[in-house]
Image (cartoon, rainbow, N blue to C red; front, side, top):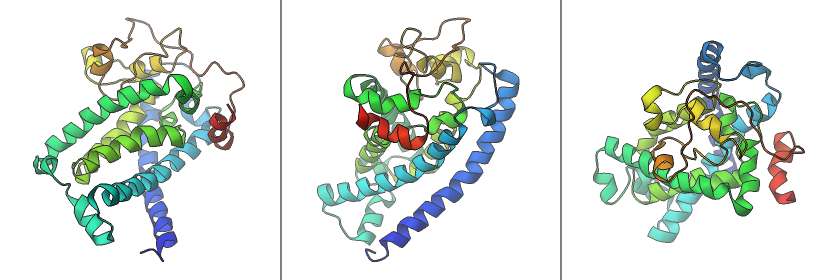
Length: 276
């Protein structure tokens, strides 16, 4: 296994790219049609946005780095906490989960994964809006033209301490990786959905699930609402902890960060936090 590691990593990258391409095409078609009829903000379509090349790079880079880091952390956790180091034993250990959580029906594990991860990510998200963590999260907020493809604009440090760490924590706790077969596609679609240029609030369901308008308020300036609507999926966390913002009959208009000299391009943006 060790001798073939470079080939295995290349194979994993190729496999990931092959999965991303059809998903990207599908999302592009769906949100091109929807935003044509229900755009929240007027302007150029997503394929003519100023920083499209940057977002495309993130769109393909993030799944690659996320998958590698997630697998690496799972292997490390199995070795440190459970003493498992053999490749076959690792696969058997994680294959269907372990412990009490793995005995639950798969759909219950999936719901548990969604709710608990969203709760943890709510607080992680708030953490990234303060102190020394903001410089990493600012990259996600740097886009002035929010579109579905903006959903992947994240610094690796943000990904590591947020999404990946939470995923690994729940899988190590015993939830079966099989839940990702349906949680994964939902997460990808919903993340693109809340960043899409749509004026949808979903009426009373705005309190149940995050919508494009709900999340677009989060991408506005601090004065308008940039320190509200931290929940990724379930707005109930914002309602419970006093950070919910959805003004009636008003749509957000301007996005981005206060730093007018914020760099463009994925390379300069990845280096940005370390220059602060």
